Length: 166
Image (cartoon, rainbow, N blue to C red; front, side, top):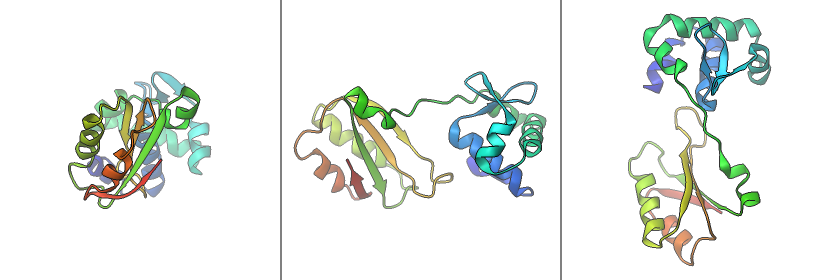
């Protein structure tokens, strides 16, 4: 699905950058062609500045999204979710970051969660960076308490895992 969205903008590298930014950050588009995050409008100039583009490129990308029914439906309903990993320590949580050998391989999340559930570890949040948008895809697991002895080693020993960062 993501590749289909990106393919729609293959003819315009600058608009492609805008679309990738929107998808990476969970930003959507309003009915009137404005960039939004969970219903809050984000100025096109702010988006343009972050990606090193021009406001007009951001605006034209939003209009182009609205012209295509499949894209329109996706971006009108896009929602952002908070990433607790940056504030986990302040909240008293712990972060386990798993770097996969091959992010396209199935079962990485399930295997890691299975290890945690076998040790009755409470999970607060899980998110995965999409391999199509991230140069270094990863699985991030936020847990309530320090992992019990042996848990990190068990996750590290999974065949899909390249590296575990605590």
